Image 1 (tube, rainbow, N blue to C red):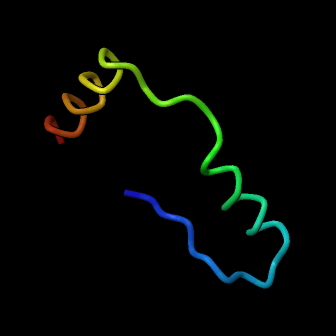
Image 2 (image 1 turned 135 degrees about the horizontal axis):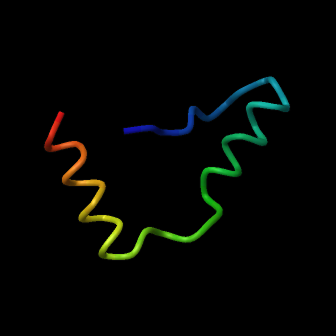
Length: 41
């Protein structure tokens, strides 16, 4: 699991943190593939 660390003093880290909340969520098929991948580890 990855999470953003708030309160950074570095602009490049702030940009990375903001970008973490942008984009589409995986659909059901991709979620199943992701689960299968991690279950196989």
